[in-house]
Amino acid sequence: MVRKHYDKNYVFAEMPVGRAVAYLVVPTVLTQIISILYNLADTYFIGQVGDPALVAAVGVSLPPMMMLTALANLFGVGASSVISRSLGAGDETTARKAAAFSLWVGTAVAASYIILAGVFHDPLIDVVGGVGEPHEHVVTYLTWAFAIGGLFFFLTGLLAHLLRSMSKSVEASIGVAAGSVINIILDPLLIFGAGWGIQGAAVATLVGQVASVALLLWYLLHDEDCAIVRQAPSKLALDGTVAHEVATIGFVSFCMTTLAQVSNTCVNILVSPHGAAYLAASSVAIKLNIAAFAIAIGLSTGVLPIIGFNYAAGNGNRVKAALKVAVTFSICMSAFFTVLVFSFPDAITAFFIADPATIECGRSYLREVSLCFIPSGLVFLTTSYLQAIGQKRRPFILAFTRMGTVDVVCMIACSIFLGPSGILLGKPIADWLCLCTACLVINNLRKHQSPFARENDEA
Image (tube, rainbow, N blue to C red; front, side):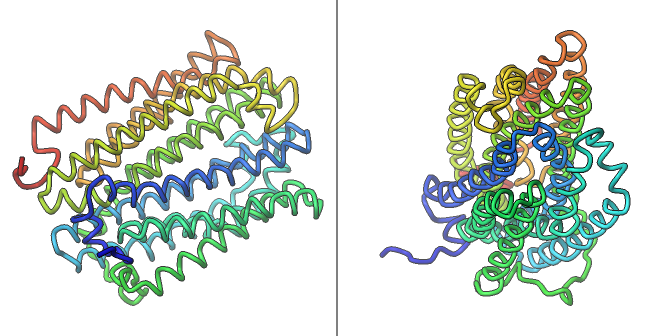
């Protein structure tokens, strides 16, 4: 008999592992690809105006927006880990508490950040590299996409995490993808048709995020399987243990996303003195780097619930099988994008902006970031696996030995010794060093406990 509806227990515990991983991961990765297209759409359509300052402004606007993603990951990834492990152990009460905490406390924290950033928006823009000509354009973009639409941006990420924790990966993906598609459609209409320029790109982002939140909320409110994570504000009874568990595990994802923005801000600061062409080229390179990371994140967040559920249930064989599928997929996808970007940097840069100086600068930048794809994908997967099984200290080691720390030192060194064209080479150097660290961390875990199940492996 063919099942028309898959509940969480069937997907996590009974469905053949390969199918289960595909069922959870493929929609998430496809959503990330669509999200990539929407992220690149702003850069592409703004690039058609032919002004490097506008392309630079879109890139400079990225760090404040990505901080909202960091907050969504803090509460969403942390809750997903706690919820999946609680369900695997048969503890629905803890799962409900984790969902309520992540939804309502997370929303309050995100709203506070948006208000605070709005009060100090001028110094914030200067800090992230929006000095000189791009400053006014950055203000315009952030007013609509961040100040007005920021809370919707946060809720899109958080609600998607909560749906995935209930095995609703398809529904989460449809909700996120719908907003991205709307954004892509509206970009040319508002940028060129309405003549709004960079403001049109920002408004398109706002409308797309509102649509995503509306659709995700509809799924959350109408699917009976989501009752566990569908918690009203009145159900928020702060449990110190649950709050600590969610925040501690999720804080690793928050740090990784935040440090990535520190890294990107460092790129802006190092590159901006060399002119708008270098800054525009680095903006394209960083967007492609984020695109590759997005696929890695889609893979790791998609596989997290099945690992957490089966780890808590003591099913080590199923955890091993899920990891094997995920690692194979990560390496294949990363290798494909590495070859593609390394081989055609000029064509890719020209696709976004046909400015000869920007294309020249982008040649080395794109090739440098392409070397990040394989190690970063494996590091993301390792970190997500450690979070899924409830590890706290070991994921922090990986979070703090990659972007925003080691890579900043490497980029500064490359800038000194190789000049502006070699700045981004610091990123792959740091990523390969972090992959070596990840191998050491996993080896250390093996020495102290079973890395696959709380109980003895059945094998």
